[in-house]
Length: 143
Image (cartoon, rainbow, N blue to C red):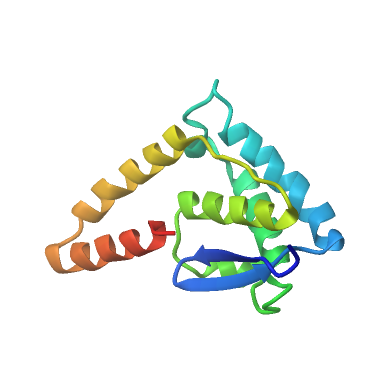
């Protein structure tokens, strides 16, 4: 179990993190679990679109804390320079929760809504840029 590796992908970066030590779990898990519960609530299928700045910041802080176990340069500021969507952040959050020892299912409907919203943005770009952006979207959602 301790040899298990969890793959976190944000933007064009990928990290392989081990099961997290308690010192990280006790800080990262509460923030991520609050958002996971909000996202998986059957009463609020559109929660992903309404994650506010504070919720996104808490998720980013917790993910950064976990990533810094293997990459000291994965600071919140460094993550802020990467190009990724809120859906990518949620996927990274669920991976970090798994590394904490929890399995959390994010509401598939909320995730699908976010992906559907991202597609028209790629189509609105000029053809050459749109093709590259669409390829980037395909890479960031394949996991």
